[in-house]
Image 1 (tube, rainbow, N blue to C red):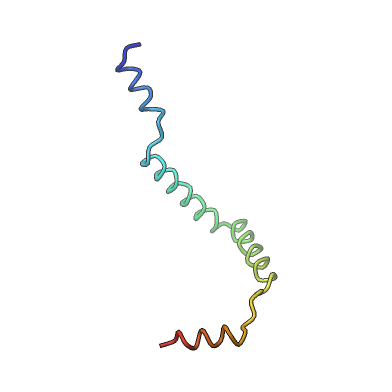
Image 2 (cartoon, rainbow, N blue to C red):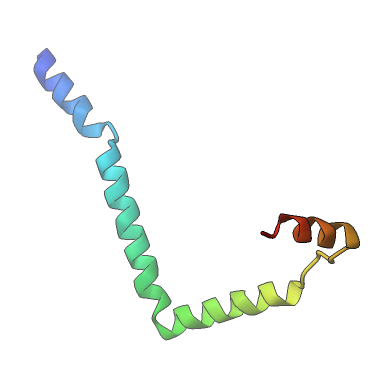
Length: 73
């Protein structure tokens, strides 16, 4: 193998930003398509109900209320 073929071989195996973004775009598209199927909608609904069941751990205190009132214009 000469140096040109070694360099070409290493370039082909080196990850690139373009390949990363193409792969990320394909993954996002696949998730978007799957989320529109009945199974995907059921999973989304189940996750949403699990998040709602946790409840809001924050309670509005007088100090927080005073801060929010002072930041309003």
